[in-house]
Amino acid sequence: MADESTNRAAFEVQAEYCDAMASPLTARLCRALGRVLSRETAVGARLLDWPGEPVADATVLRIVGGLHALARRGAADPFTASDTELAAILSAHDDALLPWLDGPPQTNEAQRSAGLMTGLLHVATAFGPDVEVLEIGSSAGLNLLIGRMRFDLGGVRVGADDSPLMIAPEWRGPPPPPADVSVERAGGVDIAPVDVNDPAQAERLAGYVWIDAAERQERLATAIDMVRTHGVDLVQGDAADWVEARLAEPQEAGRTRVLMHSVVWQYLPAASRDRIRAAMATAGARATSDRPLAWVMMEPNRDLHRHEVRVRCWPSDAAMRLVALTHAHGAWVEGLPEPYEIRDYVMRRGAYE
Image (tube, rainbow, N blue to C red; front, side, top):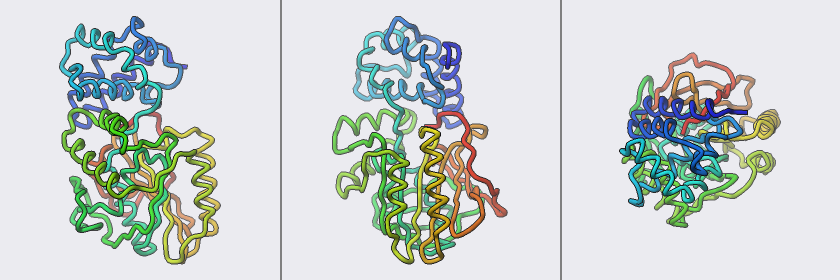
């Protein structure tokens, strides 16, 4: 169980991560919150007495999202406030901010699809272009648009040429393997999906995008418009239940079934992670060259302040391959040279929104 010292220290942990991702205003707010929080507000008391692991639970990002929402509405300016002014903002908006602590942030960043598509290019190179994507932790389902986006990944162009959403991160290192990728089906699940057709839910999603990132806000607006226009296959449910059910469904011949996720693994209970691993191992054991299976993940490496793109394919006895590193929000992707590191993903404690 965390104590007050541990809960305050989480603000510096998150601030350092914001520094590493060139988000100075958000870093400044994180540090100021760590100084000014007190039990005189319900928000302060809840954060200082947080019973879980504050970094893994992303408590700092919860309150930062709420404060950003206030700023977007013009109700307050916490990002440039002095410590005294920030304490006053917390007091004045205590009731409005408290619900932001009830659940983890859902930073549904569409540019994370750059890392995911990098993984899909490796899958398509092995098995062919046709894929069926199963995404867990889909939030608002923005990355379920991956088959409707267009990409430039180190000069490798893939996707829909007429898409309004262009994903072109800064590319570092060797490019991914050139291949065609055709997303024939994309479905997702989330324990608390965000319905962007509801303006209030869309605004909450925007609150989690850091104030320093104007380009991300523009990309979010474009992706929301695409979801509103065309829809996505997104359901509410438990990730492990859903994966087990979907893997049990018949699979089209010549189509690779791909489990996909980004910045989700840390939020799943250990029992759910174990069930998903077991379900994938079972499905992998029956995979064939005509009905292959793959796992593409983009999950954090706290030691490096960046994220890992790992790919696992069946039929094969090989463990996951680390094929790329990426910025948490997809601003850059670094392709890695062969031979790839071969090992399963090791989760490190921390929040990386």
